[in-house]
Image (cartoon, rainbow, N blue to C red; front, side, top):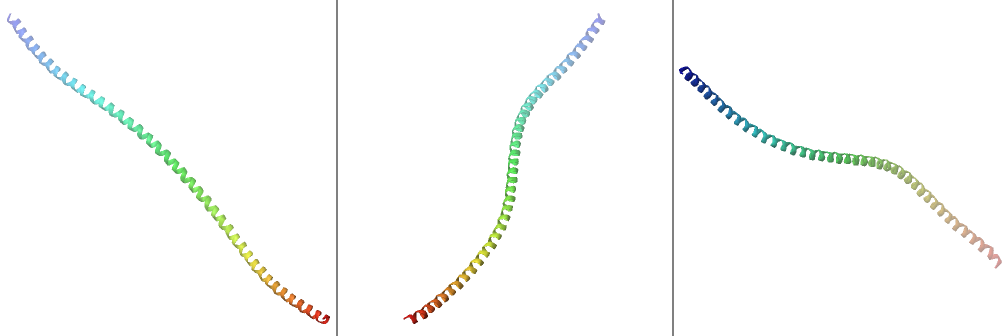
Length: 146
């Protein structure tokens, strides 16, 4: 019986050890479950944050595309302005050359006009001389007839 009692006591000690071990395991399991819950909440929060960031990134990508389009449009506008400026410079150069030609032609016309005026004055003077001579000739021809 003593042996049996020693065996029971030994089994009680082992059972108590198992109980203690189970308690510790239960605490550890409870702590692990709490950590799993915490991690699950953090995972949900992270997924939410990732979704928000993805939405923001998509919005920013759209903004970037829009800005790139605006830059291309402005670059095209600048290119067209540069082409127009070059064309205006060429036209301006051609107009300057034409103006020089027209100015030279105008000066030639002015000289010709001045020359014609001088010739006209000379003709007027000569015409007056001829009229005077004719008048004198007529008077001298009429005097004998009278």
